[in-house]
Amino acid sequence: MITLQKGPVDIGGITLHNHLILAAGVLGTTGASLGRMLGSGAGGVVTKSIGPEPKEGHPGPCLIPLNGGLLNAMGLPNPSREYIDEITHLRDDPVIISIFGGTPQEFGEVASWFADTAVGFELNLSCPHAEGYGAAIGADPAIVRACTEEVAAYGLPTWVKLTPNVTDIGAIGRAAEEGGASAIVAVNTVRGMRISIDLRRPVLGNRFGGISGPMIFPIALRCVYDLYNACSLPIIGCGGIGSAEDVIEMMMAGASAVQIGSAVYDDITIFEQIADSLYGDDGLPADEIVGCAHA
Image 1 (cartoon, rainbow, N blue to C red):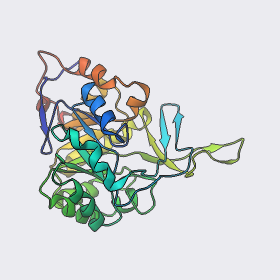
Image 2 (cartoon, one colour; image 1 turned 180 degrees about the vertical axis):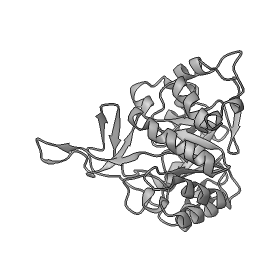
Image 3 (cartoon, one colour; image 1 turned 135 degrees about the horizontal axis):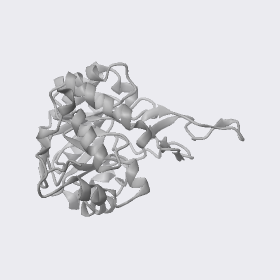
Image 4 (tube, helix red, strand yellow; image 1 turned 90 degrees about the horizontal axis):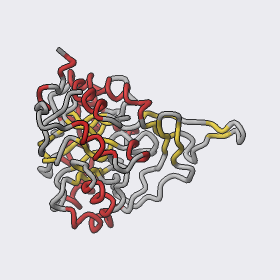
């Protein structure tokens, strides 16, 4: 298999230890768990999404395993501004703050809390199961552009995480680019649900949620491929990645780095395992394969 050169990489204005990033919403609630993932091979980590007000999230069940993935509807639980103290000791590490809001002004308000400590932001305009937030506003190019402008005004690297649940993800990517984004993250979970035939009701407390894991990898790959044609920003692939082969394939579609989430659910050492296969002493520069499938 193709291997890559080891060493730090600069993606969307942020210097990472390698091309592998912990996705938002996975072990990002505490600074201790984020530090643990950095220590176990993650090149960077994204926090749990932080919003303008504390939220307890949706009633349970909030997460169920599927055959080849996970279905979750957490409902963006977060401590809001109190989260600042949680990551203060990680200010010298590649910790990206995921933020959400219902309006561009709310995005800007949350960003202001972290403007002196964050290395960069990731805008959650893609969560499929939080009314008034995430994909509910992230499917509108005008709102995506306005939210991005509000956060990018702080002068820090600003990544925008997109939803796959739209007709033309390229249009949403271009809106983020026009708003001043430094990179695009593609994609968040795919909207779905399951029903208990014994109880005759939806399994999740929120009725519907977002599907992640290997079953959405082809969807994420296609979104990255489309965005590579539509935008000039670095793209960070996300969705069902669980092996070094997945990373290479995602890069060939156009990703400069990847985020890993659901695979951590099955194996807490996944970053170290992927890195062992992905990097080699005679590895290629990543630039040689990023987007090569478009030739």
